Length: 153
Image (cartoon, rainbow, N blue to C red; front, side, top):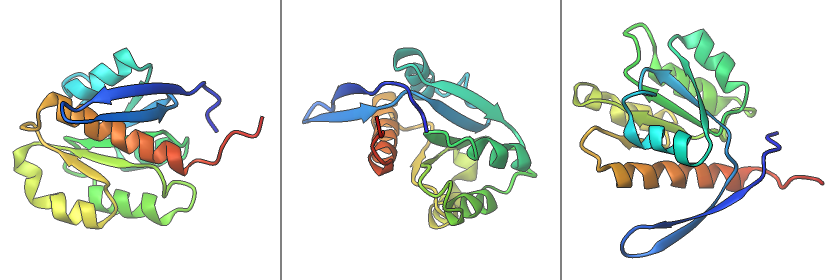
C-alpha cells in the first residue's frame, strides 16, 4: 500500500468543480507515451506522479503487480496483446481495481470497443483536448483511490 500523503486537488471544468483526493504514486506506461502525452507529462510534473515505461507483456504484468495507481496503454509494439493484458489485469483480484487508460492514435481506434469490453476504463485519442484528457485521468485516479481501503494508522 502506498504510504504517501493524500492531497486534495480542486479541478475546474468551466461548468463545475471536481474535488479529488489523490495519493501521488506510480503510473505504468505500456508503450512510449511518457514524453509525448501532454496530460500525463503535466500530472507527473505538477502532482508528483512518477512513471515507469514498459514495452512487453511480461514486463507490463510485472509492473502491474507493483499496484500502480494507473496503467496507460499507448503505441504498443505489434506483438503486445492489449486485449489479453486488460483481461489478465481485470481477472486478477490483486490488480482488478487498477484503472487502465487507452491513449492511442486513430490507426488503432477500431480496437477501442474490444479493449473497453476487456476491461479498459477510459479512452483518449490525440484529438482529445488536453484539459479534458487531464480531467479524465484525474477521474480515473480518484475512482481508484476511492476503491482502496483507508490507511490503518
